[in-house]
Every structure is written in structure tokens, then in C-alpha cells.
Image (cartoon, rainbow, N blue to C red):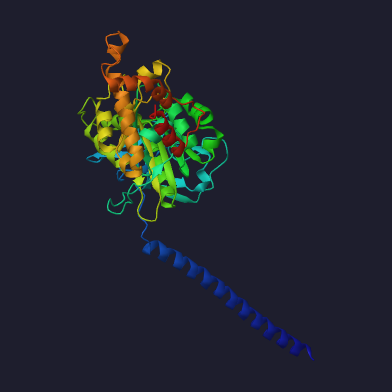
Length: 470
């Protein structure tokens, strides 16, 4: 081939190659433009709202006031502390264009004008079988140094109410392992009981006994507003390894902000609700309902709600039944939440507003007596002042009759104690009192029980009937 032919052939090949390269370049450019077009179209047609930040303008006590931000009551917000750190706060109220927020942690380092960024969601906590044996704070975060939680399911702190007509009836007893309660104050599955007690009479020990020896499938313990020292003591000494293996402990000590203490009660209840909906019989132990109400009072007063009854605002008495009503039997096909709420009484006076409100909405009350505790009588249960409102629904007639005979005999001796002690009563004057006095030591021994002694339900009933045969 001549040189001219080679040049012509090379030119044709080069031209074809250039055309292919240009086509490839145009294809790549077109693909890039198509991708950008899709991206901008998605931005323009998306429904995502702009995130409007506000700023902190005032702080009084633990209440934060923010302007320029919109959020609903119960929503979470992040408040900047410095350039890289944030603290979490929750909207608890509003007035005009101002939002009132309460921090869930310590507000150290906050400054005027700090950024307030809405998070757009209410509080929720992890739930699942992975929580068994763990200790959590009020936000559902583990504090036991056993590693992170692997639970993938979350539940709202607000919970939900069960239609009262859909609830199962309370018709089955729950064994709590305490002889006096099993036989004379029988607790039903789904019952809500108040444990009324002054400080230092063995309330925590009794709760630990119930947690260790109960027949419930799952135990949820809410330690709300108690001393930090008591948390570890309750877990190690009262609950023990046997009780902890099937328990979830939610601890919000007294040094935490009031919102976190309120969340502690709600978190424990939300976890109990999850297990109930899985068909489990749950025992919810909350210590204490009084500290929960006091934390709610702090929140209400700091946002300007006026006090009503003995310094408690009306919202406290509205929130109390909202929390308690979440416990109880579930709907058909679900399990139950048997709840025991401790109520702190000042001395022997149970006529404070929280105690009275609790008595009205609970299904029974167990009263602990300082007089019995000081005499070495443990558990210091005052049988005459205690009652279970569902006992007649979950026990047979022979046990009910034995319990009535026990109470009558016990009351007869107690009401004549002063006459007997001063020697003013002569034997033979009242045959019923003589008989009651003869078996009173057995009745007192029946009511006593060691903290490491487990007395099942059936054995408790048998021992009750045996001590009345004298």
C-alpha cells in the first residue's frame, strides 16, 4: 500500500475513534446531569420541613425558657453547651411564644443565647428480653457496666390505656412468698396494691422478699427518688442473684433532676407493659409513688402552676391515676401487671393528700407499723389496717372464713390489750377473749417471717388454718 493510502486509512481510524470518544463523553455528561436533576427534583418535591433553631433566654431553677423554636409538649430538644456538646431537655409547657423545657441531666455550662434544636420526637425506651438482669436509668440507658443493650424494639414512655371493657378479670391469686400477705391479704394477678409505710420499718426488705419469692414471670423494679446508696443495697442484699435473673431495675436516685425521676416511673411502667403484651405475668414494684409525685410537683411549680392541696398542684393528682391505670390485667390474650407502689407516710399519719389519693385509686393497701417494727416484729404488717379489695375474687370460701376468724381474734386481743396489761381483766369474764388470748402468741408467730424464708401460697393457707385450731 502506498504512503497516501496509509495516511488515508489512519485518518479514517482516528476520526472514528474521536467520534466514539465524543459519544462516550457526551454519555457520561448526560448521566451526571440526569443524576443531579434527580437529586434536585427530590429536594424540591420532598416533604421534609426546615429545622428552626431557637435560643435560650432564661433559666430559673431547672426550668429553661426558649424563644424562636416550635415544639410540642413532650418533645425532646438539644441545648448547646459550648460548640460541640449538647444536653437533652424536654418541653414541659409553653406561654405565648416561649417554651418551657426541663433538662434530663445536669445543666452545668448553659449560657444565655444557647442554641435550642428541636429533635421532633417524644421520649421512648428500649424494651425486650435483653433487659432482664440489667439496671437502667430513667432514659433506658444501662448503668451496670455490663455493656450496651441489644434490644431493637422501643416503646413510648407515654404508654397507652387499655379499654376497661377489654381487660381480663382478676380471678387468679399471685404467690408473693410472704405468709401474712398470701393468707390474709391475698394478691390477685393484675391487682394494684399500695404499701404504706413510714421510713425505716423494713419496706425495702419486704419488697425484696416479694421480688425473690413471687410466682410472677418477670419483675420490674422502679427505684424513684430514693437515696443512691439504697440502689446497690437493694439489688445485692434484698433482690439477690435469684431475683435479679428475671428482673429489670430502673434507678433514678434523688440527686437527679425531677424530670428524670418522673421518667424513671414511666420507664419502669413501659417495660412492664411490653412484657405484659408478650403474655407474661409481670410484678411491678415501684419505690416510691410519693417521690414520683414530689418530682411532678417540682416540675409543675417551676413552670408557674399554682399549688393547691398542701403545696401539691392539681396536675399531680391528674398524673397519679394516669400512671397507676397503666398497670393491671391486660386485654384477652395478654398477661397482667401486678403492681405494688410504696407510699411514704409521715410518721403514723396516713392522711396526707398523696396517701389519700393513692388509697382511692388502688385495689388494696398494706400498712407497715413503726410500733411493730420497734418491737422486733417483721415484716411489720399491721393486719388490722390492711386490706385486699380483690381477695374474695381469688380465694376459696374456707380461706376467706379462716382469714375472718384470724382478724376477729387478733382484733379482740388488741382492743383489750390495755385491760390485760394492767391486770383489770379477769379470766372467764369473756370466753371469746379467753380463747383469743390463749392462741394470740401463735397468731403473732404466724405473722412473723424471716427475710430469707419463703412460704408459698398453699403452705400459707395451711398454716393459717392450723393456727386457728387451738
